[in-house]
Image (cartoon, rainbow, N blue to C red):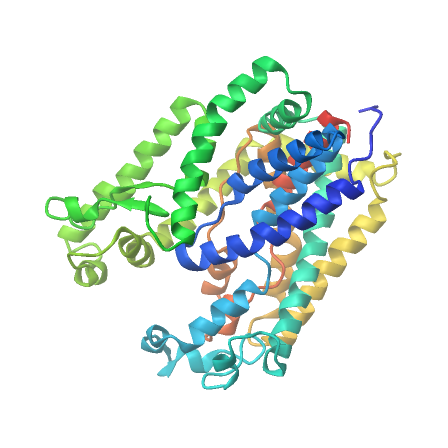
Length: 460
């Protein structure tokens, strides 16, 4: 793609990113701790629109390139949680009475949490309610190291596959056009596009204000993240998961998909969470532990959590592996072509805006092998070859398949706990090895490649 690119990372874009991060990351942390959800999609649109309007009022409108940088950067920021979030989570985990009910070889789980994950149970630091304390130093250092090594490996694979699939193969990336259309609408403000945009923007603004403002004030105007109907249906279908997702991020992407696709997704969801959950509840022959554990009055969140653990976690592992195998088979020619491109690209000329292949390889090996070494020092009970294969070979394939799938069909399924699935098939018996993984790609490279595709469309 021979295009003339323009700079988008200006002081105005950087100021917008920092300001938005300071505003929305704490909100995301709080919502995730309280509801398990985030406001990722809503935050993206609000940030882009607000800063665009502020700059327009000031008499110096943001360029399309600046809006792209704000939009794509904040997409990465608000869609993820900072690594120190898990320190707060583990502080709760170590101290809640619930976790003492679960044991490994007769030892309650809180006593198995090493000090590099969280201070031990009973440490006075928990009464101080702060992370700025020497007792947290080791856990903060380990979390920071894993975060930086993971970021290095993820970004290197993202750069590699962006070059292969955007620059060389020129894959379509169906959803990149949607991102580009939003950026174009905000920037150029064509009347026909603005009218369509505002027709959905104002209802969404009102809905979001009612949904999140009430939650922030402690008043439930609209239930978040679900409107629970199980209290009405439990008499007739006990165990069925019946309700409506109220968080826009749960359904807004479905509006963009083909109705046949969303219809099949609805059918599959209803089959699993309504009819099969009901069947396995009333007939204890299939899953007796779940049938015994269920009681009338369970909320939709509790039914989901407990039935997922007792029934659906193993099938989802299998489905994820089967889907990955299906994608490999369906994209086998593309995958072979990718390896050929990878080999041929090592000695060929490359665009100046992509780093050298040797630098990309060095970044990936530093991140992946560094995380393997640190993981082995902390948890030597897990075989080294398991961590090594996971961080290098498996992660490379996941990143490649995710990038290819996003580039060709616009979709890559989320992978539920791939590291835990791997550990399950090892002889490891402990706690730390389950919750702390070496580097493993979760498919974020697909989104990175799509962002690069949008960068080409906006000539940034």
